[in-house]
Image (cartoon, rainbow, N blue to C red; front, top):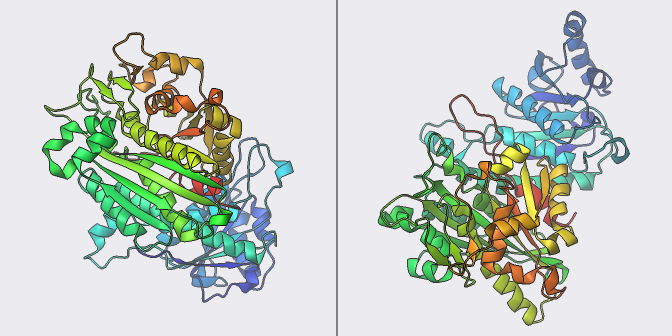
Length: 551
């Protein structure tokens, strides 16, 4: 991956050299806030916009570029945020305004924009659900997003001499003195690490099924984490080993065995803190990496297969978070991650409905829908995480531990919440507030998550009614046509992985918190560009960073 643009932060506009930037992007809630800015040179820029404001009452209410000799490059871009303290306002309005302004700057030919937030932000007492505590990082991440060029485009351009990064540098000016110099520098470090991890996730995500086969995903991750302190990489490609250790993944992938380039693989990533004595928790993360989902024998019909090269974004996001954590050298957490990559293909050896497959945990699973493969590929890795936690506790490891799955699992979550992610937690995780941590962090980083709650109906739906199996993998209908379609898959994972033995009833010593994170809504922005596919967001890299890194 190419390096990020250089980032500089300033406490005053006067600290900004005209030679350091070639466009000034000013974001504000009201045009009057821009007009009240005080700094050498900015008064001339304010004067430059007055003729426009006098003849156009809508001036300053949308993104606009105004020639202004007093600012670097002679380009002044006004990008309004609108209100920040209304009922549904949140930090995304800052990110949206920054990104829109920077994109306008790049369209005008700028490569070194400076960004100025023209006023202070609402306090916690002034808002309902918004959290602006991470606004500097959100602003920087938005500017970096505007600069990003996807891997597939970089590869297309690499022999043409075209630019592989839109920006050379980013200057951010905080004018109200609300953020200290040390806090600004820390925000730059965090944003840089998050963006690097996010770019790994998005680079893989944009790769189609041929560019990002299971093996190519593994190679991309290996290359990204090579040399990152504290991060170790392991891969499992041997089909016999996968059959033994991850039987549900193996059987789900059977149709892909006819073509070696589409064989499944498992990637394991470990991160260890540079300060073991400061580690507060050990997190086990499992990612769904379905590089293309045809639905298998339960084939997706109509246009339902479109975009299914993105069904790997859960694994991509987990890999990105591990990379970001290694780059920031986070001291408070250890990570153990299992990423299950497969192509859900169609063929004579395909997994079939009516089959009973025994999971790693010894649970007999009746297959009803091969298009519900995501829960299959993640369940055995979850069982392995459960085994490792139990073994660590038996050896006297008292660090809190929890398991998280990340997946673009269901269309139902989009039907329920739109383009937002959702968490579904077991009892120990709900009691410990593990799912709430993601909701709080997501709000601060502009990637809001909804907290769904498991109910008894979720377990009763998958509970076997005969002696021929132990659990039903799913029903035979799409999740969008199923009540509680994004909640009940978590019940299946819990039952088939053996996590049901670690519920609240197991007691404090045996309980294991588990949170399923469905990012089918948040992994893409939901905006289809013509007949193209939606943009990929990199969720949940930033949200995980906010939830699991020390402040």
